[in-house]
Length: 408
Image 1 (cartoon, rainbow, N blue to C red):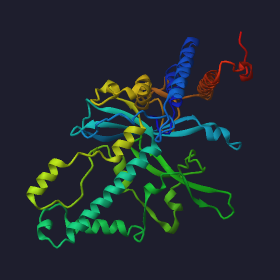
Image 2: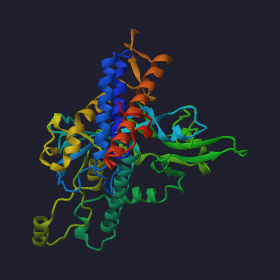
Image 3: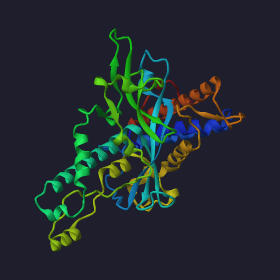
Image 4: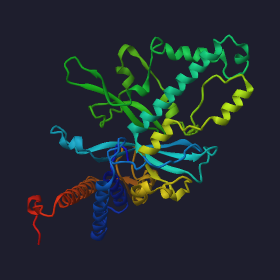
C-alpha cells in the first residue's frame, strides 16, 4: 500500500516531526513512540505481498470507482531519514538520506480550484509519482498528435469541419516535438531518475542529474548532484551545462506533472475520430463503459491514503481488504499534515520552534544528533520486534538466547 516507502519509515519520521516541537520529550512520550513503532512493525509483518508492492496494497479485490475524480498535485517535499544503502556503504559518512515525497489529492470532478470537501489526500515517493504522471502526459501528447494527423490528413471534409483540432497549430506543435533534439532540446523528465551526465578526464569528479523539489515544493526540476544516489545537491551548478551537445531542457512534461491549477480527470480520454453515423454514434455512446486512466489507478493503488477525515466518498470502510489501511490512516494523515506545517525545511532538515523573530530556528547540532539517535533507536526496536515475532511464529522452541537475550 505504501509503494516504495515502508510503514515503519513513516512512523519514525512522524515521531521525529512530533519531537521537533518538543526536543526534550519526557520518558513516557518516548515509551509511547516505541510502542507505536512495535505496533507498526507487526502490521508490516502481516501485510499481504502482491505483485504491485513489497508491502501489499490490499486493492486486488476492491472495486474503487475513481471515475468521478480528478488528480491535483499539492506539494513536493524533502525529508531526511535513515537510508539502508548509505548505512551499508563503507565509504559513506552519513546514514541519513534525502527522501523525496509528493502529496496529491483526488478531488470530485469540477472542484479542482477549491477541492474543499469529499476529497482524499495521498502521499507517495516522488519516483513513483513521476513515473506514473510522466507516462500519462507523454502518452496523452502522442494521442493528441495522432488525432491531429488522422483529422488533418483525412479526405473527408466533414471530419475536418468538426473543429476538433486546429490543423495549423497542432501540425506545428507536433512537428516541434518530433524534431526536438534537432532543435537543441531534450526532455527533462528523462533525467528524473538519478544518472551520471559528466565525468572529468581524470575520473576524479562526476556530475549526476536527478529530480529535486524546488520553489517551496511547488515545482519539480532536474538538478545537479555529486553522488550516484542523488542525495547531495550541488546548488551552485546548472546541470544543463553538462548535457551532451549543449542541449537544453524542454520542461513541458514536468510542468504538466506539477500544475496544481489544472487537474487531470481520472476518466480516460478518447482520441479516436468520431463516427459520422449519428445512429451508430449514439448506440456506441450507450454501450461504452467509462474507463479510468492508468495514472489515477496506479497512483491511488501505490499511495498511502488519508481519506475518511475529508469525507472521500469511495474510501475503504466499505471494503474488507482495507483493514491494513484502516489501522494506519491516522498515522498517514499525521505524516501528510507534518509536510504542510513547516516541520521540514527545503533541504528536508527538521525545523524546531524557536525564539527568533521569524518564529522558527534550525536545529542545533546536539538536537539533530538527539533526534537522529531517537529515530535510529526506534527503527532498531521495530526491527528487533519484527525479528523476534518471526522467530516465535516459526516454532515454539526458538532459542531466544541466540537473539542476544534470555528469558527471565
